[in-house]
Length: 295
Image (cartoon, rainbow, N blue to C red; front, side, top):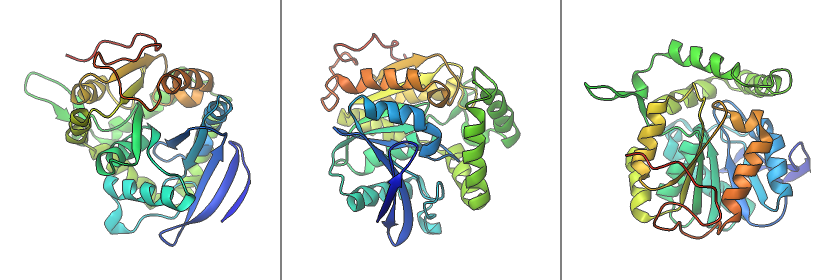
């Protein structure tokens, strides 16, 4: 295993299942496992993760397989379940004992849901930030249209609009583009396959199971998200039932463009009985009043 200073804290290289793995760590205290979004790596979130570590958490942020220099999963394991199993083995390899708080953004949120569902002893609490998994593209009188029906051109248009919505373009967009371009050049097939996983992910059954288990789940959502529509957010909330929900100003990747807001939200969420079950009302004492649950 090798390590060196990095933009978040320390950058490490080792092996998981015989393949190269790259991850970052920073801070001391309770472990917060952070799982990044599609086509990115933890480097895109450097400012928010560094601030979170400075507030008293031990941030552990792996580059998921196929991104950030971490080797790709075998073809047979290229599923959300496969990614979740990789995370379990990664935690074992780096010596992190569960259960831990897991924060997942976008595609990383989908991996986090499967991790919590499949490995009950690993996750103590789940924080989903503009996460995939709600599966609904649009709701209508004739029934829901699923995200898997959404054409690629529509994804592209909304992704472009999302990048131009409320971003500090001169500072943030180059970071995102650089990270995504590096991953695309390094392993374009992995980027495409993960995009398809994200597009077709339907985790409503898994979310309902987490609800039955009473696993503490917090949903944080940027209200101006144009990548994941409001119908997907509503379906995710419905599956979770009485989970705590906080909405914030911002687009799909608001936590990158506004690391101060991300740090503040996560500090509030994690500082209040971070490893304890949520109260039956669906909120915790000391947290700002969340949005009402979906009906």
